[in-house]
Length: 204
Image (cartoon, rainbow, N blue to C red; front, side, top):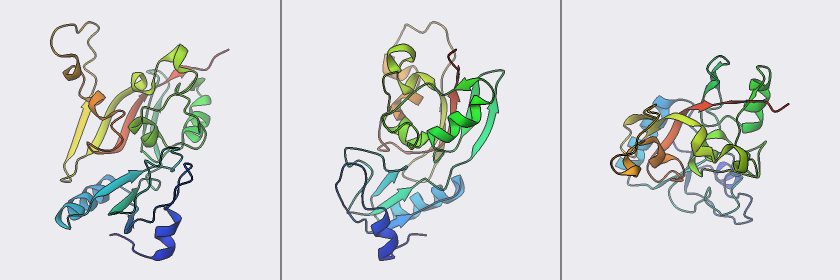
């Protein structure tokens, strides 16, 4: 379930920040079911878990020297693209560059442009609400996430989506769309295992 092989641990010990922290173990799930079991087991073993995408972070957020480094790279499938509704459903390990090349065939793109645009994983980008210069036109990553499937620390699977209401002014703003609790939370509330994304037309 976890790998404690020194070579594997060392291969996940650095990100773009230049820092090096060797995790105690590395887990590389390939499915939602495996992710759920890994988190359940980590809880029973009382091991902390640090989720990671392609480790393009410049802040050291995707490395650790304690507990399990949970790499989501192996969950890298584009599950569905619906050009009519401008929607894509993807696993968290899909690289943003690969996603945009795939949806470009339909005249579409995923608007957010993190600094490492081609190499960042979709899950990592959502977890950090990563955005670049195109935010000025399209808004941040959070604006382009329709729903998420998240595995919580106890291994339970939850789905959070947008209400679809055109006007939603009453009540506490933070409770309007629970999906926003997870976007930008950097994995502290759960691990993203699937995302439904909004796409925009390619600019002329």
